[in-house]
Each structure stands twice: as structure tokens, then as C-alpha cells.
Length: 234
Ligand SMILES: Nc1ncnc2c1ncn2[C@@H]1O[C@H](COP(=O)(O)OP(=O)(O)OP(=O)(O)O)[C@@H](O)[C@H]1O
Image (cartoon, rainbow, N blue to C red; front, side, top):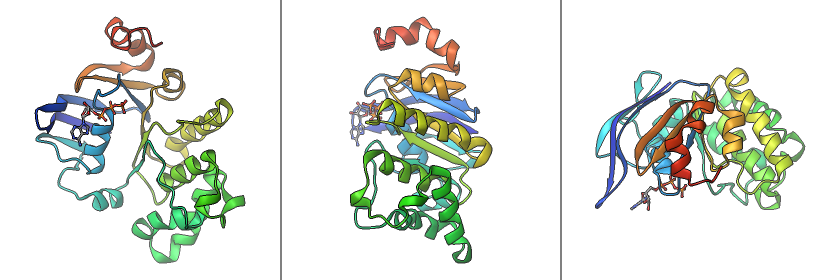
């Protein structure tokens, strides 16, 4: 469970997060909002790349702001980025090892990497270099890094961007299996409202850094204020 309390992020005169208080308890929660609403900034606060001016964030009762980014990874936090971060001159398993080295005991690393590769379906390309992978495989590497070593919260920032409809569907099926099979909560940002509808039982909407709506996804997407903020986008 993610508990956000009175969170304020300030960049000069801009407040991309402005007095945000919200609790996200669903196994897969969605985060939507127009461009510039503060979605990525919130993920950056959760993962430790941005320090807020005020407020707190807690994961399953543990305060996160006291922890450095790597300590948060050790505490079970994982994230993928809008632009995938695959290392070109490492193999697929080497890319996963970069996370496993920090979160899995040496004796268990090979098995943990293999389990993550099996989960995302990348065992057949274990030894391929990052530079030879297509976009779908790269997105799967990112997801593989997220499921390694008993994660508790996985943050996905537009994880299916650029994928075909078929690839997006396969990716979505994998994400849907995470809570039961990996044991982590998932928070997904996406502009594709249909993807959010299909994956997330609960959705939060930000607008200019403020909470516009939070609740069961269907109710949130039907909310006139939400529809107005999107100006007919869905
Ligand atoms: N490092 C920064 N310095 C100054 N302003 C920033 C910085 N990062 C983000 N912002 C501003 O904060 C606001 C929120 O940005 P953010 O990237 O969080 O929005 P978003 O909801 O993720 O948007 P998008 O859907 O376009 O990715 C924007 O006005 C953005 O220009």
C-alpha cells in the first residue's frame, strides 16, 4: 500500500505536485492525467530521484523519504522508465544481473535471474546483447528487472509505449500476473486509458499536481471532472 501525505514538490515557481494526499491499495493501480500533470514527478519522488519540499510517502507503512534510491531498491521498490534503459553491451541476463547484484544473495542470483527471464519469456535470448533486441524484448528486459528479488512495489511509466497492439496485450497479461505470482503491488502510468481500464482496479487522476479523482477505475473514468480534464480524449 502506498500512502502519500500532503506532498509538495517545487521546481522554482512550479509545483508539479501540490498538496497531494492519497492512498493506493489496489494490487494494480493506475495513474493518469494530462501532460504535465505531475505523474512522472510522483514516480520520481517514490523512487528517490526527486526530493519533495514537504510531505511524506510510505510503502506498506515504511517511510520512503528517509531512504536513498538504492536503499529503496533493497526495500523492494522497482521502476521502469518512459524511455527504456537497456544497457546495449550487456547480455539480457547481464542486464538483469545489474539489479540482482544489489537485491539477491550471491548464491541465489543465477536462479533469481532465471526465474525473472522465465516470467517475462526471455529465456531463449538470455545471451543476446542489448543492442540486438527489438523494442518488445527491451520492454520485457525492463519488466524482468522489476520482478527480480522479491519486489514489493513496481512502478511502470508508460511501459507499453511504442508496442504493437498484440505486443501490448501480451505485456498487459504479464503485468496482470505480477500481484499473485511475484507478490508486488504495481503502479502504472499510461496515457492509454483502455490499457488502464484493463489492468487497474483503482485509478488516481492528477491535474496540475492536484488530486482530481481516486477510486475504482470505472467510476473514475466516468467522472465528469476527469472527462473534462481530458477534453474528449476518451
Ligand atoms: N526537473 C524539473 N525542473 C523543472 N520543472 C520540471 C522538472 N521536472 C518536471 N517539471 C515540470 O513539472 C510538471 C510535471 O511534469 P511531469 O513530467 O511530472 O508530468 P507528467 O504528468 O508525467 O507529464 P507527461 O504525461 O507529459 O509525461 C511539468 O510542468 C514539467 O515541466
